Length: 146
Length: 167
Image (cartoon, rainbow over all chains, first blue to last red; front, top):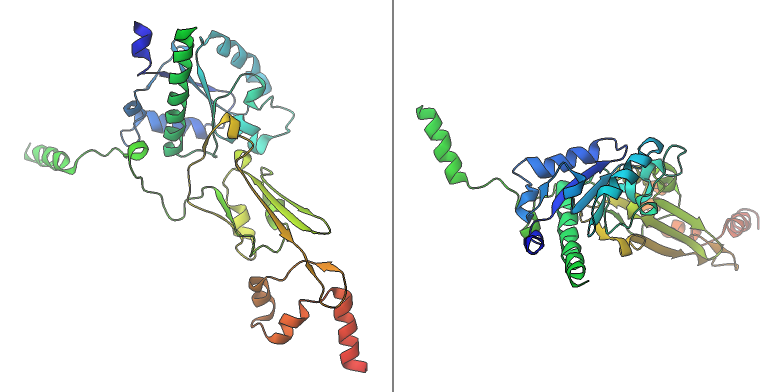
């Protein structure tokens, strides 16, 4: 029964994999200040990966953060939606082909939505989260049928 | 105390400050650096945008038939260098911020334009076409003489110059 209500309120979880903090500032802006207010979409930030439904990943996945990312993704239960925030996890961005990064993100996990930008605008994040919620609703329906 | 009530009443009348974006319109500044816009009719294929692009989002390829401009949104860092250095304003940042794509569209978020070369009006050589914006920059005003000159390949231009002066 709980999962029926869960459809309406996915919880967000963010992972910083060596980001420059630009995208994280924009994520904080989207969540905290009433001007953008991601909670209008029914979302809520959570501190624990075990509660996460939508995972927002920032940063180009540096060598140091790679093992932490993999361990963290293992803790997040299925069904989940992975959103790549910023150009770094999508393609490597300005750090592409660097010796110290292990990106892009889709080498490690199945990504669902890409929100490109450097950094992204809060409105673009809202766009991406809205798309992610659409995908998450489909995923959780399939999960219940199975 | 009176001041507090004044502020409270003012805020009550002002309405919510939340941007209605996903459900309504939002304000985008005119100079916001969003997705690149490209006009192939202005491009001269100098390759400056490719040279200054820090994230390798722009690639220009030249061959005999013409050139190809390609741009990949997923690696563009929206720095605006291409627009700043473009001599003819063929590349610039539009204020379109809708950069959210599902994974299947990751490699489709591109601009891809072919610009065909033109044939020399005297021989069969292929030359890049002349763009008015560049001619205006080089010559000031564009006369018929200039218009004729840019239809020739470098060899034919030399030949015609020689004929005009010595024959």
